[in-house]
Length: 395
Image 1 (cartoon, rainbow, N blue to C red):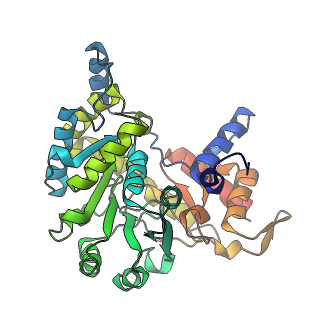
Image 2: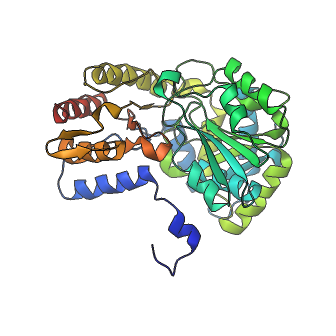
Image 3: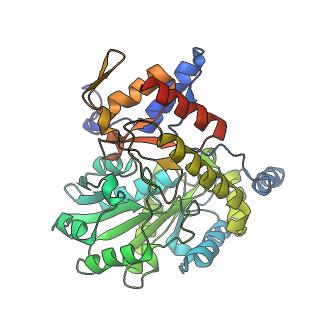
């Protein structure tokens, strides 16, 4: 901590996923053969039809500043996508395109939270939710879960967490890091609680919408009594393997969208022009065109769960979406492995990096200290070798 820096940056945690990715790059640069199973980054190439749209945009000389909230025709494509895939109806003034879904979430925290407002976070939660809210003055209120409950909260858990200070609830479904998916009945039960508290805003992170092995994605905003107070956050990073293109978007009540537009106008202005043109094509095409990736992830899920079942002390469930497994590894806490005392998930994650040359992420960063996150957005070869190394290192 440097006293010359602001209190907010000194208090902020470094992103655990990005920190591990940086460590992996450093070790690889030194010649270490590291298998990276830490990042949520698909290993597929971008679909050809999306590439062609980007190349066309370059040849068509798109190069100027973009509208703060996104090109009008991209917003129309997003509106069509919401209607087609989610049965949600939005107008252009309810859509804001940002530099990745992470910026969408940061915008929302900045425009909705005052100092002392509470934000309910069902755990495990995506690594950046907590610090994004803290920077905006909010106080995270974590609802713990466990593998025994499939990492899901209940309506009773939600109601118990609500106080007069509650302003927002943020959740992801499919969930990063657990892969859990809330079905329609479960979401409706949460809505039945929330209708009693009309001032609470729901932020539904649906970035993994299409990587859903239940074949049925449900949005909280689809309930008529929740539409006016739910913000849907989405983007193209995961389903279209476009992580570096940095395009996210929201569908929101107009007053929230206008506020995000105002905030973004002072912070970054509009998102990249070429990426926006490519995303128009991505969203105009039916989800069936990217199902080959989802099918591969489902096959990899089966592979990694089978291999994990053969590793002593790893307790797993079957995730229903995204591309992560989130095993409970508390069996190893208090044990000594190759002379190293394992006191926590962070210790075990670092041990696996140093002894097995396999990168994972500690569950502590996601609000669950008993687990580690393993990404299977990697080749079957790397998954198989990574699990072999982990098993060997834990003998």
